[in-house]
Image 1 (cartoon, rainbow, N blue to C red):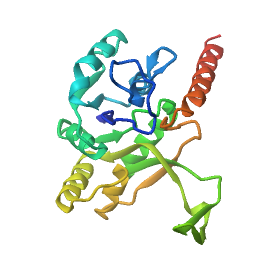
Image 2 (cartoon, rainbow, N blue to C red):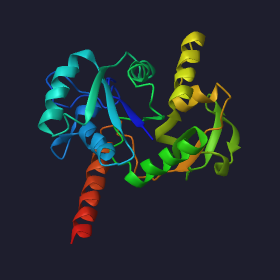
Image 3 (cartoon, rainbow, N blue to C red):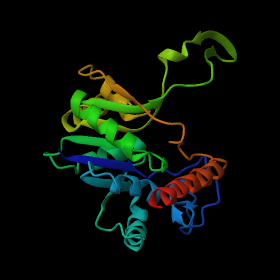
Image 4 (cartoon, helix red, strand yellow):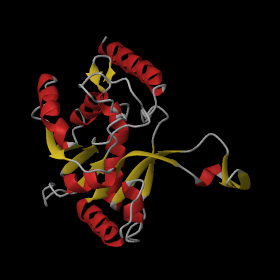
Length: 243
């Protein structure tokens, strides 16, 4: 089975604000340093260490390609990652990367550049589920009560047992994902994730693999404190397992 992973990393990270001096003139969250390495590097390493993954394709802004290539080389990842030019939106970046995927690829996984704490076990489970069903995503059940509102007025309370908060990776058969992007382009549809595009085809039911609360998406400055804690816990667990 051949599995390609696409990591869209061309976003500007406007919610993170200023404060990422890792590359001159850049404040994008995927390049912010976490224990000395860009968040993107931590994310990539999770897939490099997963045997089921065949290749990793990272979509970047054109003016970041040369810089990123040097970073990957310094981090020992030059031979593990292929770079492509991304687009102005996440959807465009994924579509650009998708166009470079070999036709003999079975599955394509898409993962957020700023989710560095995805576990290898979760990666493997969602890939295996997609291999059986054609489409699978990672999600968690919300712990808070969810309300449907109109402006600032509550209209209904949604049953939590029928809701999930979606995460990544999201994994699909190559042919299915290509069809989904083609239809979205024809219809001028912009989705919030890849699953929303595949759902519109009405060809397969998208399966959900339960993830963990630790698989956070680093989007705000305060998330970095939690990221440092999770990284310390990861490294402590590795040290204990090596003893």
